[in-house]
Image 1 (cartoon, helix red, strand yellow):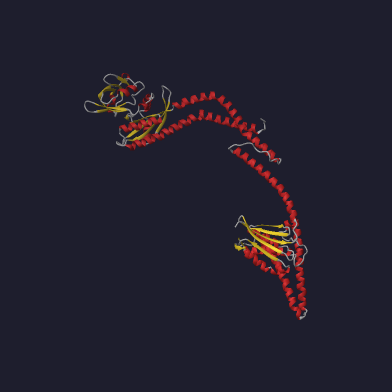
Image 2: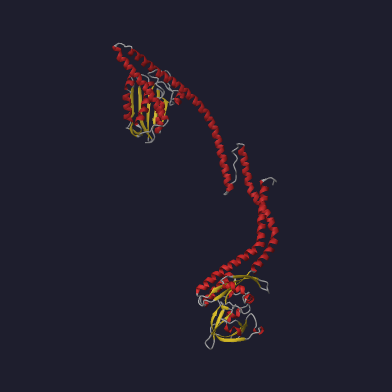
Length: 586
């Protein structure tokens, strides 16, 4: 890798970015995450405890339902939860039993503070409905809602709780009776940390005057508490609540451990210590690999771009991928192809431009010739009209007057025809004329035109022969098609050998209608056939006023046929020349 190359730069950037990301993650995990986790844990417990408080205060739960909801809370939040009086005594324990004594009275026995890892199995297997039990507990609990046992004994065995009454400096009492109710929602909710609940209650109660005032005002208390024996960190939350039935204020006491976060954090520190070196090597390797993966196609694309800069568009990118680089490769190849085609088109356009310039020069030359011819054609009738009008003004003899007037009128008609043809050609070339299409019977139209040209035909002793197998019709503008046939037929008359036939043939082949007009006379050279449809061009250069024409007739016919979408042309025959028109499929 070159020091200044894109691969090295990308490697350094990616390696630095990955190392920064890894370092930030490690620092956040080791330094900030424990505090963040603790904050989130406390916030979550407070929200869920508030929700439980609202449900308890409005739910009118019985003992079974209260035990079920309490057990559900503890399972979902990995917490211990009990409902207490203001003095810290249990009001209703999710783990409790009820005994029916001989005198008919019932006593409720709390088990939340009794269960431990040693007696949990005995409790689950020995507490059966209808059996005789003897409970040993503190005599000071006679006036409490529930009895807190030290020992539970059936007919055969007994089990001890969290402490021995022999160590207490207070009187004890026994209660005997038949087991009538067992509320143990799920012993899986209980854990070996149940003893911490006893210690937390002992350390927090009786409440300080400040805490009592806060709870009386409806404020929830939360405080971090550390077990003095094990050093386990916990969070205690106490929420005041009104009993839905009695209206008395009670306390919801929750104990949640933060120990798992400390243990996880210590394991994480050790893990990052071992994993750091391997992660550093892995980051360098991945940065190098990724930089090469990214820059390799870029270098290939750069090679193609360099070739393009030298106008070499034959080199193509070999990259074929379904991503942005693949799209860039396709775009670069498309650009290369387009530029190559454009360059070739420019070369062809330059060649075509030279051809067009030559054509323009030829057209301008023909235009000058046309204007010279048109000036000559117009000058002659103008001179004739001027001369004969002066004769009329000078008072010629009466027998010549009518002849002069006829000559002046005839020359005026010729001038008018020439001007009209020039105007028609201009309108057709500017596409200012719209076609009025309809069905046109070709045979009738040609016969009508031949009738109008009978004086010209008689003047050269010509005959029109129309050959048509069936009556053929086409879609077109009749007036414009008449102008085309008139111009072509007039052209045939002009160049036909006297005392010959002009053959007009109408035929249909593969759905297309074809008209051909053939006259006998001199053929047309190849160069003249290419230019015969151009305006200002005349095969006849004699400038004979009767037979030379203006050079506009076939140019007008070309424009009209183009508007109709027809194919047309001219070809030599053994005896003369044939013009043909092919109409589109009818």
